[in-house]
Structure formats: C-alpha cells, structure tokens
Length: 464
Image (cartoon, rainbow, N blue to C red; front, side, top):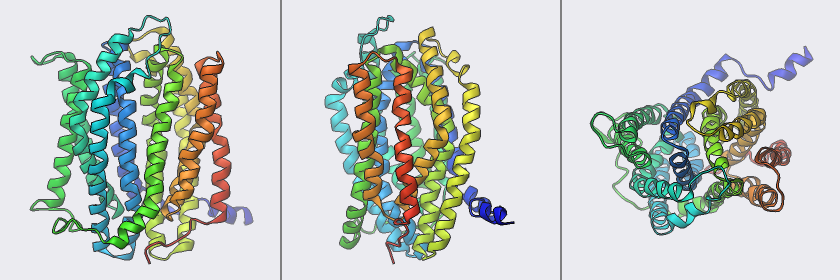
C-alpha cells in the first residue's frame, strides 16, 4: 500500500493525462508532422547528391541559430503571457504579444543583414576536406544559393512565431498545429516540383528547396492572421491589439529582467550547437552529411519530449500564475516522469530504425555508417535529454531565467564545446566516440537539474 502511494506521486490519473495531452498533443502532431516532412525534404535533396545535401544542411545550421533566437525572444514574454492568462488579465496577454512582435522584427532585421553580408564566410567554416571526394566549392555554391533565397522567409516566420506562442500561452494549440501542417504540405508539394523539375518547372535543386520553404512560411502566416483577425476569428485575445504599439514600461522592465537571460540563453545555445557541429565537421564532408541525416531523423523522434517541455511551461506557468503552487509542483513531477517514460519507448524505436534510415539517401557507404552510429547514440541518450529539457522548462515556468541561462547555454560553452573542440583539434579520435563523449557530458547537467528541482526555487508567481 505504501509503495502504491509512493508511485501515485509520479503517475497521474486519467483526467491528468487528458489535460496534458490536450495541450501537448497538438504540438506533438504539428512538430512531428513538420519534422517528418523535413525528413522527406532532406531525402529529396539527398537524392540529387551529397554536395547539395551538405550545402543545405550547413545553411540550415545558420538558420537554426536564427529560429531558436526568435524562440528565445518570444519565450521571455511568454512566461508572463501564460501567467497573465492564468490570472485572467487579457490586456496583459496583448501587451506581451506586442513586445514579442517588436522584438522579433528587430532580431529579424539583424539576421538578414548578417546572413546577406557574411553568409559565405559562415558557410565556409564548415567546409573541411576529408579525402572522400566531396567537392568543397560545389558545396559552398549550393549552400549560398539556398541561404540567399531563404532570407525572404525570415519575416513571415518571425510574425508566425509571435502569434503562435501567444496562442499557446492561452492554451490554444490547435490553430498553430493546423497552420503548421498546411505549411509543411505546401512545402513538400513545391519541393517535389522545384527540386526535381516536375510538371514543366525548372530543376532547381537546393534553391528549389529554399523557394518551397519560403512559400510555405507565407502560407502559414496567412492562415494564422486570417484565423485571428478575420471575420470569423477563433479568439478575441488579439482584438484591438494594434490600436497601440505602446507596451507599458513596467512590463518592458519585467520582461527585460526575466526575458533577457532567456533570449541570451537561446541565442548562445543555438550558436553553441552550430559551433559543436563545426567541431564535428573538422572530420570532413562525410561527417557533415552524416550529421545532417542523423539530426533530421532524430528530430522526428525528439518531438515528444520537446513538445512536453513546452507543455510544462504552459501548464505549470498557468498554475503558478493562479497561485496553485503545490498543484504546480505535483503537475511538474508527473509530467517529467511521463516525458522520460515516453522517451524510453521512442528511444527503442529509434535504435531499431537506425540501420535503415541512412539507406534511403543517395550517398556514400561511409556517410551511412557514421549516420547509423550517431542515431544509435541518440536513441540511448533520449531519456537523459528528456529529463534535461523538462528541467529547463520547469525553471523557466517560474521565471528563473538566469538559472536556465547558466543551466543551458553556459553549460554548453563551458563544458560541451571545450570537450568537442579539444577532441576535434588535439586528437585523432573518430567522430562516433567523439560525439559520445560530448553527449555523456550532459550527465553533469542532469545532476544539476535534479538538485535545482528538489530545491523548488522555481516555484514562484511573477505576475500577482
């Protein structure tokens, strides 16, 4: 009986999982569908050659930094948006949206300028000869053509993220899911036409993939704008949101104090991941191609713990905003366990699929071998990543963004990157044991996260 009571601390009832899935399932479906189409997208580019696939992969490393920086920018305000919604303050939610949109446009302008003037230099950092026959000049050309076309899609992406994050703050996750699904279908359709030159269209390869992505981002943004501002709008939360662009100074100061560490964290973390991949690329173009295959495939399996992390920020944040602190602690504990158990199952599926996924690509045997090994390592470490991700969003839900800054990006730059750089430049260690050493360093982060959760310093209402 005592053992049963102990387990009830970690396992919720039917109503609990219904509540969790109501919030998280639309995000899982949207992210899963998006990543599945990204995998098909990646396979299409991979069918026309390793150089085109590698060029696109390198450019996408740079766009990942932009995408996650935008995520960090809107997430700082979303901490307040979720708690304002829990408090019932609709104007507070609108003010957080205005802040998100203004900040997103500033970040987007800076990113366009950087990529336009320094794109070739940034892509060249990833190009290292490895003797496998990869053509560096062609890879650079394909990467540049993809990057310059993609610049046209940065503004609609930033607008869509500002709206979607605010909708999620209020518990509305279905609209972003639907818009995302339509967008990836549009992307897939135009990819097929423009990459391979079907139905009389020119065969554009990597540039065609970029054009398809840009079209899909405009479609996604249009769907969201029509749904929230159109005649039959689904919510009134954005009603009169543009009657002013002014954001109360008190809120700006609060978001700046709480959100700046989060923005810095996401920017530095994404830049850190790009730096890690640059360290791996020292082992040659075959590694660049293998990392691209591995990351695209593993992202499809990672959507569950990534979406559950976002759900923790929403659900726990709303409960903290409503003053239900003990309920928030109980909810958080059960959601973390749910995320870890889900990833034990998904990790097993990924391990089983690992030998077969790289065979889909039209690439060299060495690239497939490396990609298979990377996927197996990722499968084994998925529960660890789930715990670390849930710990991060738990602390974020209570506004502990400086702690998350130390926990996430500072850890990457102080621990993970020095390990990767040292192994890449001062040893001849092959890529697979090198990658494993870098991943196992996250065990340190897991211990730190466990201690921080136990201390409950994150249990805080920041909008009351």
